[in-house]
Image (tube, rainbow, N blue to C red; front, side, top):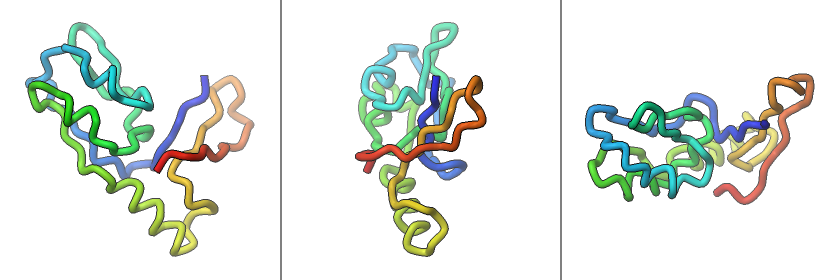
Length: 111
C-alpha cells in the first residue's frame, strides 16, 4: 500500500496517551489515516501524513490530541516560494515497500 506523506518532520500533532480513552472518534474524522487503535487506545502510526486540519483534536472528548492547525501547509507554501520544493502541493504519495524504485508522486487538493 502506498503511503501519503504531508511534510517530513514538520507536523505538530501530539498525542497524550495518558488522556486517551480509546473512544476512536479521532479515527473517524482523520482524512489521512494518521492514527490507529491498538490495545484499547489510539496511537500515531503515520505522523508525516497529518495535514494538520485539527479535526482529531477538535473532536477528542478527553483533549488527548493537540495540533497547531495549518502549520504544515504554511511551511509547504513557504518552501515552494523559496525554491526548496518542486511543487506547491503539500502532499506526496510515497511508493510502497514492494515498489520502492518508484518515484514519489504528487497528490492534489490537500490544502
